[in-house]
Length: 263
Image: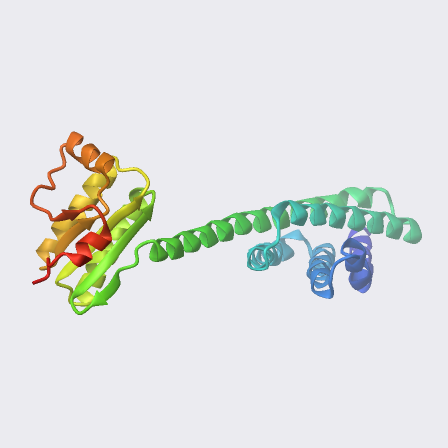
């Protein structure tokens, strides 16, 4: 008897899914309502066919919508508010159906044993996918930033400039090394001017990173020249014990370019 009542409730929810979805997202566009219409269908399937038969599809729905939310710039808190509205609308509907059909009160517990775990799974799958996709988006953005922050700019045949601007952390230091070596080899450079005038702070890590870049360039036949060495930067390098005595240095990039160092 209970199974018949659950099947009946699922059938009615399936018939009303479009109307119910519009109640949840009445101020949103049709696409947003369609998302919840799909979820109502899944819960209708759960009531008709059983939780175990439906939970996999609910998980897939949560992951797909979580990924789409990041793609379209959705906010996690707003999405979770939507699931709260979905829950309220769903249970209000179930309550109304049970009164209309005069179903037994015991069926409420049977419905809850299906509905609540499925909704928990939908929220969990959505949230974890949202966070994973968000992290992936941040990682891609950081990668794009690192690409822009390590521009090897050719100025004439065999000569290029590497302007370093802002702070340098461990990730950026690694990317600077990797990009510089690849570009130097690709462009068959003989000289690379490293402009440090835009570096905010030079500490041990930054100084060592610069030294390692210069040494690595030497190994591939590229002579590195430092420009934009401010007095305080020079003092820091000396105090840190970094030996730049064999490296040509200039106060400014303009000075380096105007000096006949390439003859």
